[in-house]
Picture 1 (tube, rainbow, N blue to C red):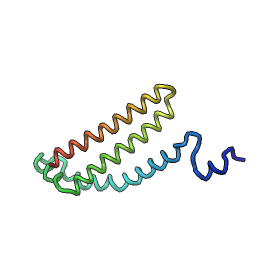
Picture 2 (picture 1 turned 135 degrees about the vertical axis):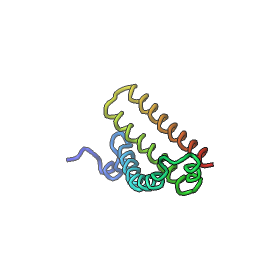
Picture 3 (picture 1 turned 90 degrees about the horizontal axis):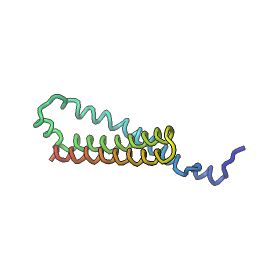
Picture 4 (picture 1 turned 180 degrees about the horizontal axis):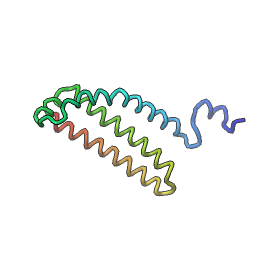
Length: 123
């Protein structure tokens, strides 16, 4: 016997109304990272140890720049989702809310910083 109504079972929302959505976002970003990380590594692996001018020339091309931007966006978004789960599991009260807000700001701030830095190098 389930304590959920038929409507809640169909909608798939629990008492917090966001668990399923959070799970799907984490799953989609995980699958996206399975594709993006190898592309990023193969496009930037040869550039390790190269002079700045060569790295700048490589980032001026669209494919490496887009792969780096996707890595930054999807990677930091997935990071935010994962840290939020850890904070929700191990913290309580006002500290939990503050920590989630701080980590979200930190994640989006680092994402923006990375994208601006990428744009400065590429342009």
